[in-house]
Image (tube, helix red, strand yellow):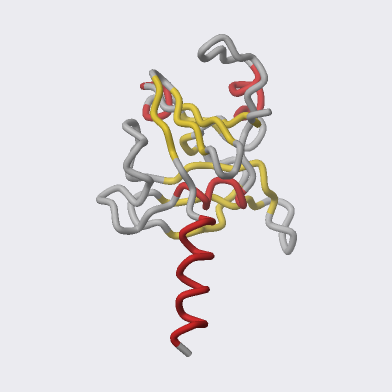
Length: 139
């Protein structure tokens, strides 16, 4: 039993994400993602239709290939042990809903969001505005 617990702990440690804060971005080395982390993530509200346009038009650290994250990507930065339920490397966050590009399949008029005041995953109407934190793949 102790052997199994040690293996589980080692596996968890190896799979834990490594985050690096650099200027106005945070890099998740484990999941190969680069996240927007500037003042705009707490200023702009977008809906399901306008969020992709917003992300496609930003330029951060010379990169232009930003997009709205999926729910599976956004939940990777949740940390319920932090005050604002997000990994501590992120400096800009509103304790509010952040949108994703993921549609709720049981109702196409709804989408998945993350509430960074609690770390909860929620479902909301696509036409309702929420904050957006753009992401890009790190090659």
